[in-house]
Length: 541
Image (cartoon, rainbow, N blue to C red; front, side, top):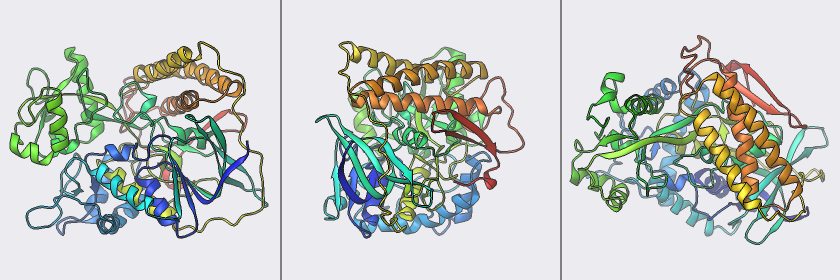
């Protein structure tokens, strides 16, 4: 591969983390953003709820911190939580200064929403289109910045890493593929940010966009970065259940405004399960919905919006109201059929509190990063908050000086022409990985099923890697290579944790260990997976 682009800072991803970082890193030099689809195709753009932040005088950093720690089931890193919570108000105000229009109450103050696990109303929102509003403003600012260039439909394949003059691992950029044109090559950069989002497409049913194929986790793992707590995948409790609805989320804010979960018999089943009822944390609610569906043999549960009222529902949730009407449901009146779906990756690439990874010159922010904020279960609306804070901190770092090194590029895809039936095989393998993950490594797990999943995923990963090395690259094959590896890492991490905690629940080991430990995984250069466990306070990136 040859160097096609050079820049001071390379950003992989165009969600809230990538765009925020790009705007702030541009003061150090020119920035190149690679995004695999269109610039607005991100999980940020789909975020309905908002940004959790202490903006009301009756609220406090201590309360927000304690709510986050409680939701995280013993695995949050307090230092990280306190940092992110403390930085939140400043960055929310910065978004407002940039032009983000958050919803206000009749007095002109921010209209703060309530979501599961929060003891106070602290969700800053733009009705139910918060992510879209933030993305709009950040994208506009990027387009107007002469130091930033954004290339759409450019898929990063692998990180370009080597050793610097001191023998330390260093990132020099990344290889990429533009599937529409067939162009491939290298981007050389003094600093690289992974902001590629999550792993929802590893599962058969997800709230995530199609681009969420765990690319960042897979690239970082292949480069030798430690991957932490990947078993903690959050399933959002309320994804719309309708044959014509693809991955449409019913915001947790709907329950925050008073909607109640009921089974098909009309019972408020969460009232008996938890003191917070339908506003318990997502791990508890999603598992109870799963239990109700399995025990009763039902295809879904119902979200009763009548406590909100039709007029208020339409005013507070205009986007959800429009979609419900498209599916023949009267907003605020008709019960909404919902099911859990894969939503958010709480683990990720080991990252310090300045966004640094184990490789010099490589930073992460957003869902792909593991900072310790989310622990074993993310508190609602803490994701956009963490992405803002970590992108801001990563962008403060001065880019590394050019050491004159030119390491070997990452392994190139093969050159053989694809076989006539390659498309059929790829489709089959895509479906096989995602269905296997849904059935064997989903909301509720057993050690036996995890063992079976690991054995099958080893084969699937090997097949995808071999095909990638032999044939000309395609976007579908590159993504299959990533979801197969991420699925294997996730399953191995889940099998390594012999307890139930937060989002990880084993029916054959429902107890929680007294000591809260993290799972760490790392690929050696020859592709062998090693694992270890250690106390959160004792481990760093």
